[in-house]
Amino acid sequence: MGRATVVATAASALLVSITGVTSATASAAASATVNASADTTYTQVVQDGDNSARTTLATCPSLCDGNPSGERMAVVGFTVAGLPAGASNITARLELYSWTAFASTTTAVHQASGGAGGAGTWASKPTLGAALDTSTAVTAGYNAWNVSSAVKGNGAVTFAVRQSTRNTRVYWASKESTNTAARPRLVISYTAPSPTPTPTPTPSPGPGWRLVWSDEFDGTALNTAKWRARDSYVDYDRACITSRAKNVFVANGSLTIRAQKENYTCGGATRPYTTGYVDTIGKASFTYGRFEARIKSPNGPANSRGLWPAFWMRPDDGGNGEIDVTELPGGASYYKAATAAIFRDYKPTKNDFRYTFPTGHPGDGFHTYTTEWEPGVIRWYVDGREIWRRTGDTTSWLEETFGADDTYKRKFHLRLNFQVGGWLGDPDAATVLPADFVVDHVRVWQR
Image (cartoon, rainbow, N blue to C red; front, top):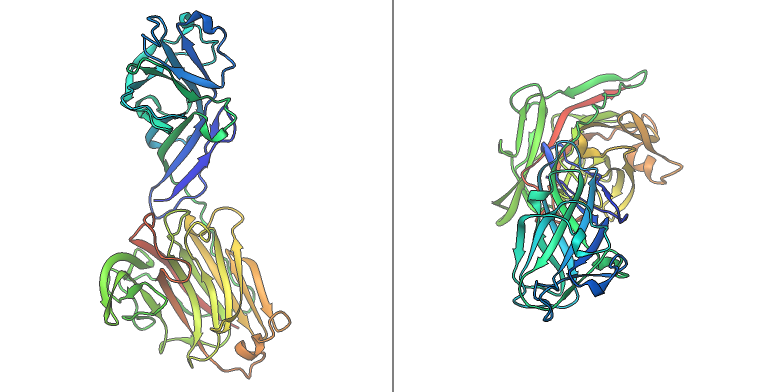
C-alpha cells in the first residue's frame, strides 16, 4: 500500500493530490494536512472587545479567573477540497499548539455550526454538537483530538474547543501566528482508490528484425526448456534465492517473481527474505539482437524501499560486459524512474542513465523495456520511445566489450531477478511484502 503526504501551503484550503500509487493493490493510503481557513475566540467577557485580529486563541471554563461569566471558547474552521472520489477509511484529527503544558486540564472538541470568522462576541457563538473527543491534559506543542466522525469528505467543517477544568486561560496559536509551524491544522488520512492506468501498447520492432526466441508465459509452470530457476544467494542481496513455487511461478499469462519476508537459510546463514531469480544459461544465448520484456514493477512511492527488480544480460564466458535492459529500484528516491546501463567490469566501469517517465511511473502498470544491441551501438527504449544510446564515440570501451562488427562472437544470456536490499538500501517498516515482479513476455529478435 503506497503512501502519499501532501501539505497545504494556502491558509484557506487544501487541494489533495496523490503523488504515487502502486498497482499491486487496489488502493493507496494517503494523508493530508489542511491549514485553518478562519478562527476566533468567543468570549463572555465583554471588555475583551473585538477579537477578530488576535494572534492567539483562548479557552477557559465558565468560572474563568474568578469571573463566573468568563468562559472562552476557541473556534477553528477548515475547508477540505480535492479528496478523490471513492476515498474511504477517512480519519481526521484537530491539532492546536500550546506554548505551555498544563496538567489536569480537561478540554473537549465539538463540531460547530457555521463559520469561525466572527468577532468573538458570545451572543454570536456557533451552535455545538456533542463532544467528539476529550483530553485531560494540555501538552507543550501540538495537542490532538480525534474528529473523524465530523469529516466525511470535501467541504467546510468547523470545530469548537471548550475547557472544563483549571479555571484560568489556556492560550493556543491561531492561524495568524508568526510561527507558521504552530498554526492550527487538520490532519486527514484516508484510502484512495488507485487510478486505472492507461494500457501501454507493446511496440513493434522496426524493419528487418525477425523473432528468434520468446516466452509468452502462457502455461501453468516455468518452461524449464527456456529458463533455469536458481537456488542460491549472492552477497549483495539480503534474500535467499529459491526456485520454490512461492517465489517463482507462472499463471494467467505472466511470470511472477515474488519477494517475501520470511526467515530462510542459504549459504550457511539465515536471511530475512526470499526471492526468485531466473536465467537462460545453457538454454539460450545471443550475439546482438533486440531484447524486450513487458514488465510491471511492484514499486510505489513509499512502499518499496529495498525492492529492486531487473531484466539484464551477462556473457556466457563470465568475462567483462553487462547490459541492463532495465533496472527498477524502489524507494522514494528511485521508484519514479527506470535505469538503463552497461558495465565493462565491476570496479565499476559503467555508463548508466535514469529515465523518468513523462507521466506515471514503472509501478503504475505494464511497460515495455527494450534494448537493441548491434555492432558498435546499443539503444534503449521504454514503451517504444528511444531513451538512450551508446556508441564507440560516447563510450571508449563499448566496441571492445560489446563488439564492433560481425567478427564478435561472444554470447550473452538473459536474466530476470528481484533483489531485496543491498546497495540502494534495505526494506523498512513501510515496505510491503510479499511484492511481485510480473513479466508478461520476453522476446528476442535478430536481423
